[in-house]
Length: 285
Image (cartoon, rainbow, N blue to C red):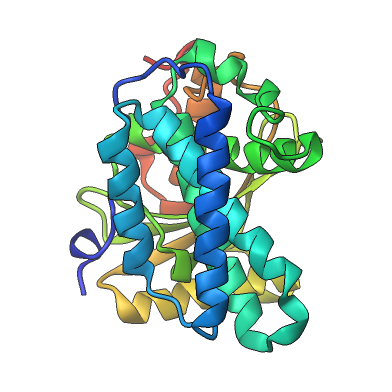
């Protein structure tokens, strides 16, 4: 199976200013999300992902600003999850899978909202938790994770690689955030992204070291990449990276030159290809 025919490709769209978030739009998203959650419970937790694809189309038809569309879709999905969480004791193991699936969909919308925003909009996004009717703690945590993903996606797109979103199911089963096809390479990248504010820059875990030196978590990721390689053409090299708080301008997802070069160095080590050697530039173009 070819990954390009079955996955959504990441793109860096034209940036849009995030307009003032109107409370009536947020309340409508919350209300619609609660209805979807209650319908899901009545259906015995039987989920049709096409329902949420159609929901995205309805939001896009009603509003032109895609940064706002995806931010409201994130709040909609959070509302669905809130309804399920209130009733979790009534359901078995399937509840945890469905809940994780919906959380993955919500996170994708937050990442897409970030990718659409101008730097000025992005720099004030963390202050919008009140208007979105979520707690500051919850929003900060989810925003950090989504920012980390958006920053990695933006960096990989700088290389003109083909970057694909993982599906919500793959996010849960394989623990992968994106897949990257490399031109003229036998290997492709199977990428998991973590956010850690205690990590100042970007840290790459060396998953090619001896098995006994890998942590249990790293061993699981390597095994999942092997299983993914059985399903899709080519060899998928696992990358586990942690994105810190520095190395980016405030409100920007585009990395500074030395972060860009850190990726080049990691690719050179992982793939053994000298063409990825750092360029010693001061700033990414």
